[in-house]
Length: 219
Ligand SMILES: [Zn+2]
View 1 (spheres, helix red, strand yellow):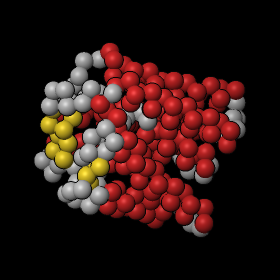
View 2 (cartoon, protein in one colour):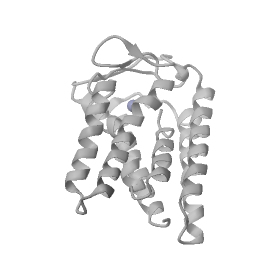
View 3 (cartoon, rainbow, N blue to C red):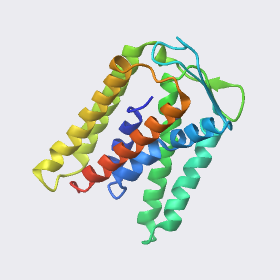
């Protein structure tokens, strides 16, 4: 799952408005941000097996970034560092840290729907995954539905400072769906680990940048 993860970011922002949407965009992809360099350096692995699922060719071993235990540890670290670095202490920054941690943890549960059974609980077997990637259309639609529901909740829970504040976030979600469509249906499969790493990390960065910008337009 790629853009579907951002549904969790929008929903968590709706829940706890003091959290930065930009940092939430980073949180929900945090274990993937780690996974690509881990795979490149051989700590984890990513093989390309043609036709592995209808959606992509990714066969992955990732016990450190994509086990449930690993996700909990990364979530605690991410939230914890944010809490320690926050300048205004108190219940507010504690809440924000918890919400960011939940963002990190949400990644595993969103991946659970689409991955083939490759997500460990602890390290090795048992591994889980409901395998929605076997259907590209179902995967695409799930991500659209998740984003639409999260957008609706986010718009209800936050108010726009300006007219453009309303359209900016709607535009961002439409852009995410468009990126996903291009990814699944138009662009050729990117089966080179280095190229995939660069394009994934760049996408994470650009989308987080857009989220920081959109966030500034709403209260
Ligand atoms: Zn992932």
